[in-house]
Each structure stands twice: as C-alpha cells, then as structure tokens.
Figure 1 (cartoon, rainbow over the protein chains, first blue to last red):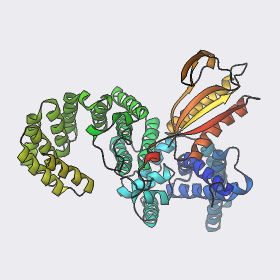
Figure 2: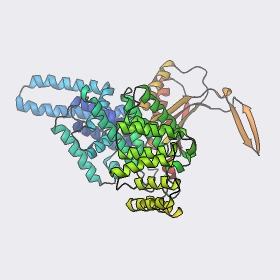
Figure 3: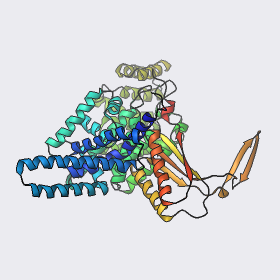
Figure 4: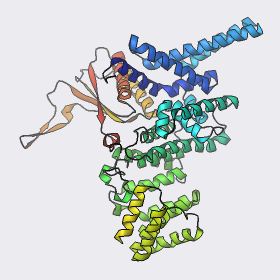
Length: 422
Length: 124
C-alpha cells in the first residue's frame, strides 16, 4: 500500500489515539470490572471497532472519548450478558436488575471521572511480584505503553507468539491469584515501587544495549522507558527514587547520538563528541536529579548513579570532570548497593582523581577477591592504569586477557588495539 | 521521535479568553504527565523581537515587528512515537481554540526534529 492510502493514514491515526488513551482506558475499565485482563480485552474491542469504523465514517471529532464510550458500551454489554446468565441460574431477577443498573451507572461514572490512582494501580499490577520478570515487562509495555505484541516482540528479539503467551499467562495469573486492582498497602509500597522501577530500567537498558543497524523498535525502548518514568514521576511526584531513575535515564539517553561512531562502533564516554549530547535531555536530567535530592533521595541507588552521570554531563570536556566527586559518589553507591562492578568504577574514578597508583590499589584488591575473574573490564581497567604507570609489559598482558574474555567483537577490537599500541 | 509544533496566526485584537488559557494549561499538564510534552512556551509579538537576515553576503539586523500576515504565537516540543501522535496532540490543542475562542483562526505546524533514528547507520 502506498503511504498516502487514506485507509492506512486513518489506521495510523487510530494507533496514535490508542497510544495516548490506552493506559487510562484500561485503568478506568479495570477499576470497574476489577480484572485487568477483562479490562484490556474491552479496550482492545474498542480499538478493533475504531479500526473498522473510522476509515468508513471518518475519525470522530473527539477520538479519545469515543474510544472510552465504545469500551464502556462493550463493558455494559458484558455486564448485561453476565447478569442474564446469572438470572437464569439464580432467578432473583429484581435484585439482579438493580445490581445491573448500578453496575452500569458505576461503569459510566467511573469512566467519565478518570482517577489518576487508576493509572497508578495499573502500574503496580503490571509489575506485580506474582509475575515473572519478562511478563512484567511485556504487560507494562502493553498496558501502559500501548505497544502491540508485535512491537514488543521486535524490541526484545523474541517471536511474537512468545510475547502473546507471556501476556495471556500474566493476565491469567493475575486473575487466578485474585490480585485485586488496588494500590499496594503502605508497608509494601517501597518494595513494590522498587519492582516497578526495576521494570522501567530494564526496558531502558534493553534499548540502550541495542546495536547499530537493528530494528528501530529496539533503541526506541529508551524512549518508552523515559515515557514510563515521566508518567510515574507525574503520578508519584514525591517519591525521590522515581526522579532519580528519570534523571539517570534522561542523562544516559542524552548521549545516544554520541555513543556510536559513523560505522556503528561504540564510542566510550571519555571519547565522545560532547557537542552531540542532547542538551534538552541533560537539562531535564539535572532538573530531575535536583528534585530527587529535594525530596530527600540523595542516597537512593538511582539518584546516586544519576549524580555520577550528572558529573559527566556538567563537564563540557573530559578534563573538566569533577573526578574526586565521581569517586566519592561511587564510594557512597558502594555502601548503598555493594557490588564489585561499582568498586571497579570507583577504581577508575580514583585513578583519575588521585592518580593511577591509587586506582591500581583498588583494582588489585578486586583481583585478589576473585569475584570478577571473568569480567573483561577488570583486566582492561587494570591495563589502562598500568599503562599510565609506564608498566607497558604488564599492561599488554592485561589487554590481551581482556580481549580473550569479551564476547563482543567490537570491544575485542578495542582491547587488541590498546595492546598493540603499547 | 521529537516534534516541534509551532502555532501561527494573526495577532488577535483581544487577549485569549480565560477559559481557553485554562484548558490549554490542563492539556499541557495532561500531556506532561503522559511523558509526551517536553517543553512549551508562548511567544511575544514580533514587535518585541528582531530579525537577522543574511542576503548577498550582507548581514542585516531589523527590529520587529516583522511585516508578515501571521505571527508565531507559541511553540511546543513533543516526544512521541509517530508523526500521527504529534498531529493528534496538535489537533487537540487546536480544537480547544475552536471550542473556546469563536472565530479564531490559526495553524499549528508540526515539524519533525532530527533525532538519533535519523542518523542510525544502515542495517548491516
């Protein structure tokens, strides 16, 4: 079909409206019918009807409310059908009639008066701990991002049937386990929020790890994650770690154009052309970080990582980086979330702030601990520090080892080049 | 994908109705919370600005107002998945004008901002 085909153009408009409205539509429906799976089906029905009718009758003046009204009618039909079924079973017609009327009125009112908490409930349900991680991701993108099964499949390089199954199973699990369409109790809120942020950051990282030339759906996951993060920040504006995560993603996303070279090769942070960084995203990231800190979130793991990213974002040239601050932030991060990878990053920062010998001491402790024995960055960092200390022979051996350990061809090339130039 | 939406129209004789401004603020809040609206601002009449023209190798600075039929009224920067989504938001914005400011005429230009997707290396 040519791009100018009017039916195709209408189809695209339906999709656009869907993306804007899907989450609220499903959330509103879910509150009334009490079941996310059913709510999603009703919303999908409305979408199908729109796809059938709009190309014939034209796009309605208010497409959002149109979808809402259509889903509502479908919902009322469902309630009627179920009521009739019950009538036959229990033969208490009058009571049922009243119940049916009140259910219809409730559905009507609920969908007209959109409640922001609905969307928040939907977020927590989609990322519910009874679901395995891949299902949480699929359900979140589907329910909150308005992505199609095909788009999710392309983004995660899995067959469409796999994603479809994950979603079907997830919805069934939620129904079977009687997961109520409610906000987590206050006591569970911190851990449940952590789970939600984990899903969002996983989506972001999947997009961020996409390599050049892949289907654009993959890198666009970064945009999806940012969008989800911004939605969360709007829903829970006083939760500092949401702002911390948004800040981290905004700043990381600001480097997307600079982190890949002309031939698709990765460009390391220190070698990036900083003029290619997206200044709007940097600005937004710094603002989100300030908000995280304003709400007492300085020590949140995402806020700390964002604070480190911000040190780089504020430096217009690599030599302007506030390395002592980066090193200090890594030290704090290491206390909050102890990890040898964080420690290795601290070694790099200390190596820049205090000199290669100080960095090497930290790396040597890591080598002695043995936890990162198969991690290619460990010998690579050690090689770099040794090279700066003038110990070329030892440095070459480290880069050779790093090249051996990595499974990424481009990275291997970089390590071998470093080895050769020493 | 990022889109810049520029609202252009004749400079009206009266200020916009309060109800319109309130509705625009609501739409802006909704779109911000949806993660779609990145930035926006109203633009003062061109009388408050200037124009720097390069022609035949010569730079020429002229103070406003510019003698053009339509003035730039406002801008909005959107982060959306498709052009149609940007058009949908722009349409909602224009419908508010239609419904709340009888007789108003203007146009919202939807312009794509180049992004990483436009610079992606060809598939290997």
